[in-house]
Length: 250
Image (tube, rainbow, N blue to C red; front, side, top):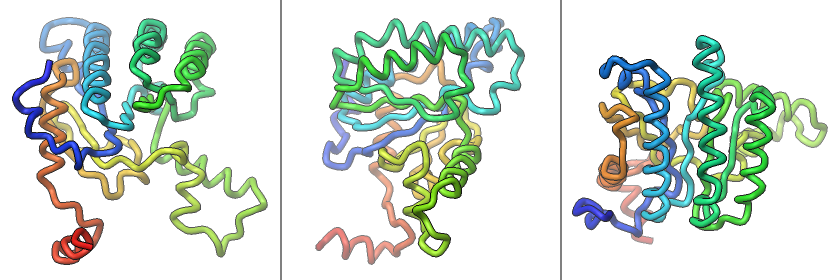
């Protein structure tokens, strides 16, 4: 349902790409004397709500930090439960993704995922490949440093790039996100003030929005507030305010 706040959104200045660090599932569960898995399960409701809201609002790309490369170090029982939740989400949501013309994408060291999860992920990506309204990317077994390491390995393994020709554009072309715009808005829930190894290269000029809201409580209205905050900022990309105004006037 459209809220009053949404009427203030400038549809001409929407972020093309929103990336979200979904944090706070464990704390949400602890606050309610529940196990951590209950927090992750509740967090899936926020995923559904936010993905739907982003599509409704006209966001072209949304990337969710779903499982980090470092998360494999968590207790096996929690990792196994997270993989089952991921598989369940993919199976349950694929029809809605197709209905909403949303293409599923995934980035990270996907080869490290369990085969059962990998198979369902690959099937869902194939089934939704014709989606044109929005691209939903799940960052799985993902780390920003790992991504840069993998990009460098790809460059060194080829013979078409000379050291002298390597520049920022070259690096970007070998990242997992080569076919996506860099995020304009990076949202982190739960109040933590760090990137946690997420999209380190791509977030160089992203506007960062931190909310104390725990991820299981994050819903459409919170996404709207983040977008409104983004639209209130002046994005300078290293320029002065005067230079930005002159550029916009051209």
